[in-house]
Image 1 (spheres, one colour):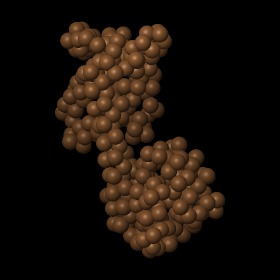
Image 2: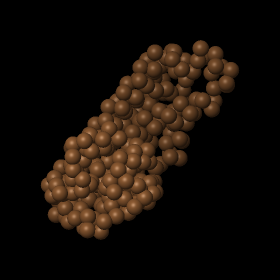
Image 3: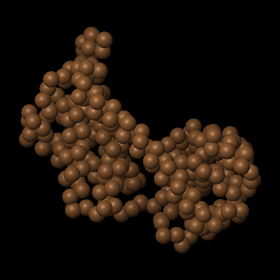
Image 4: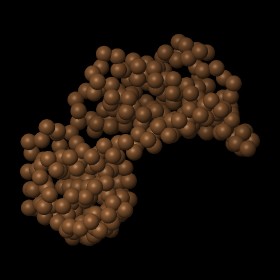
Length: 273
């Protein structure tokens, strides 16, 4: 699996500063893909292309100051923002961080090694925060699957043996499908393919037809990871393990949607009491 370049959205209207950033990114060991927006309004549209990190100037034709950070944070809540400005001062830096920026870099400090380090730290902090959130969510789902009484879905499935025990052949089939889905999902995250949404919904439906729950999806995810990472390099295994949690979380949502559409409203209301 070839590592995708880090996609940087530079929000800057000064051509000289754009050239400065381009020069700072040249000759780096990492691969960078730079796109430029001259206004905040352009940048808000550009975030639809899923940049990995935003370099944001504070003085733009259609907005200025901390409001730039606030508007970009609202438009791209999951993308780390590094403020890039000619102004200096710790007070301004603190205001940027409080508004949602991950870091602050003065243009006078814009040297290749400093820019690379700042971008790397911002990306790593964002990734660690996402992993903590995902782990908390998966722990929550795991707890629900063992309790079996917290929601209409888990209440309906209470007392049912795991799918891998009840119907091992069927479990092997969905696990094999999940392995292929995992590969396609990682390609989507890398920007190489569209999200395999139809396959995700279909597989969630297949697991639902087997009366599978959260614990079964976790079983399927772990088995899929084991199969996908056999013979893989360390970097590939890490990508499957870390980015694959996003797929597991989304699949939880699709499985819950499957049952919501099939449990009669009266029964769901009674079960939710």
